[in-house]
Image (cartoon, rainbow, N blue to C red; front, side):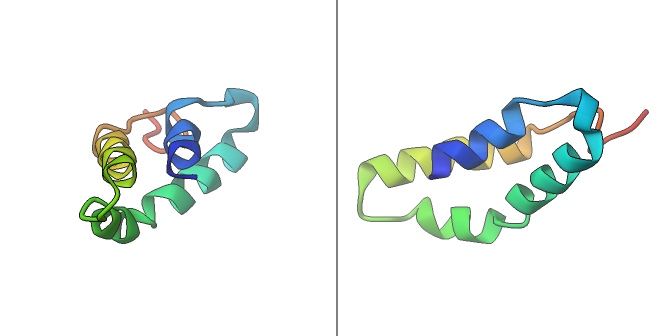
Length: 67
């Protein structure tokens, strides 16, 4: 599931910019949950959470950051 959220941020669909923006905003709004999961007992969950946090921190796209 965490990888799916990361994929939502990393793969765009420009013809549906409004839907993409809403999906990205939904993922970013889960940052606190990802922060908690980054300290989970399961190493796979921690790694996935760190990947998602990196994707959130580095996220720039035309839908979220219009020129």
